[in-house]
Length: 291
Length: 262
Image 1 (cartoon, rainbow over the protein chains, first blue to last red):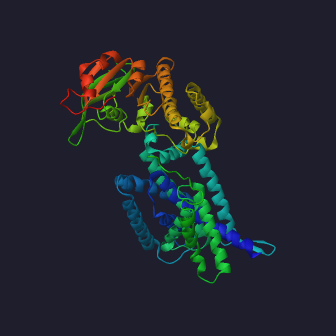
Image 2: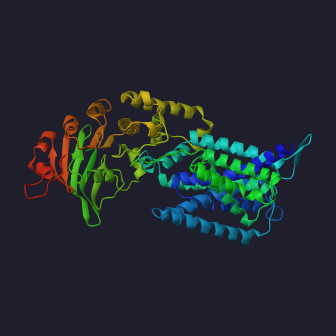
């Protein structure tokens, strides 16, 4: 029955990858920039929560810490766009890519300076409990990660389908010029999208740090999530989640049935195959611009 | 008071004077057309009214108030809607969704009530949907209501864009070459709609158009531009027979290079 365990732990990992990938895609769809610091956002969000709630740091109540971390990361995302990226408007995409890579390094070292480079676990109410059904042992944390990701996906779906802000975000990512003349403040919407992806990254970080430990280099997970986003179809929100789940599921199975060490290769192997076979990803909206 | 007033507006791109000391008024309830050869500055004037460009000199007033301090996204809320020469639609959305985005500046709701879909929000949705359905009926877009823009023929997209601008319920509608790329029949439909937009909906229209048949058929007044300057203003007949206009289109005499025909 270890298949069930492998599936559950793969899905839980996949949810975290999927949420980071979602952050990539949100920003890419709206602003056509790729935020390579998305993984580091995840790590920073996790460390802020950990810094507030862990007993050897500030020892605040868990939910208060989560709320504050989400708020801080949202504001940080907004300000990053407002103060830095808005000034880069009109620059080449490469400049934005380099900027976000550098930003990732900065975040990594700041986190190391504040919270240290040792791996730490988030003291969250969902970690460390086991569920037993017959012969199956499931980590409560993993089950919760899947549930929370499902709820968050549902909320995001409602947000983009119903909320004025969500629809404005979709509109500005499809056509900025048209969005302006429908009365949508496109620049502010871009900052809001950075805020939203900061928030999603924080939730991913909290989930990640609840199920294992986190250290400042955990942000490098972002590269795997980037692969997930490309596999799912860069530019598709459901695709990002799907890509995350695929990568997450493949890993534990590769680790179980392949020689040691191969599991880390698999996400990138799928990425390469996908780029050859279907370069737009699984759920892409293929759109060739007519001239 | 005129609905829209441009006073001595000048815009330069580097050394090129795109619009040179242009003044005109658009009165409420009229159809006003801007004509002129390519590069005369017509679209540039549109882009200044939409706050895409800021004039170097001069003033633009809408209902007596300057709009030069406004952001582009404030323009629809003031009551000015526009279409684009090259059609700017939300490609991955349906016709209905495109038109509903036109209602954005009328939407008064917050994040929480939207997410909970409260009765108040539902009521508002109904009002917006009704306004949009009215436009769909008006422009005969019923067969395309649920279709994605990406799959629609050019002529239909052109109409959808006009519909989306009307969904804003503007006081002033800016149409940037509404007939370009359309067949003769489609152009006749456009003429018919512009008439109705003026008469039935009571919306003032300012348009840029090359098709002189359409311009003559629907415009109350016409202004001709060449090289960024106003060269004639008046009824369509007056402007078409104006010697300066004929010269701008056809060239002054045999020694000059052949100008661009309309």
